[in-house]
Image 1 (cartoon, rainbow, N blue to C red):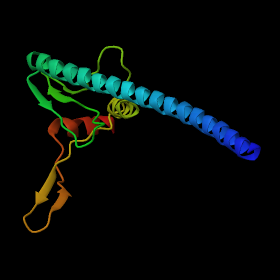
Image 2 (cartoon, one colour):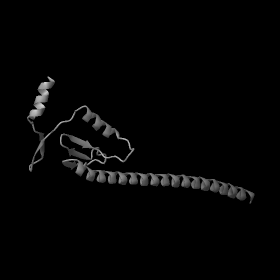
Image 3 (cartoon, one colour):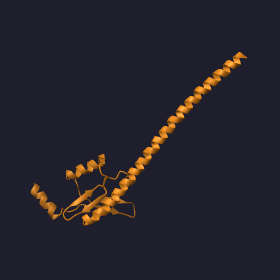
Image 4 (tube, rainbow, N blue to C red):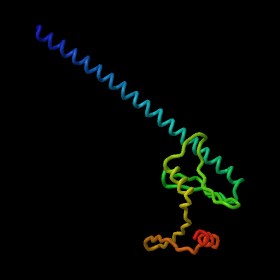
Length: 152
């Protein structure tokens, strides 16, 4: 009888230890779940406020520029929102909520523009049999040609 009682006592102690571990793990998983949910809500809110800033900014630019072209991207990390043509400039516009920093991609685009590593490229597309995309060779404009001769 005492052997059975000892075995039963050991089984109850093992069960209590296993139950405590299960409860501790369940709490940890619940906490991780709640943290992920909170992060998802924050990201969703940031995305929504960013979209609102972009739409409001786009409408404001309609009064400031002669022509405004919205850019869409197949990438969720699209790094430019508008191309805008003013009286004497072509502006690359990225809308950001105030006090948010530029992403790595946005900083790269900014650097390339500042270094004047910008090109105007026309791509010719042929179809319906297959799809062939090739770059069109364009003659330099008179202003670009005069800038080239001045630089030399």
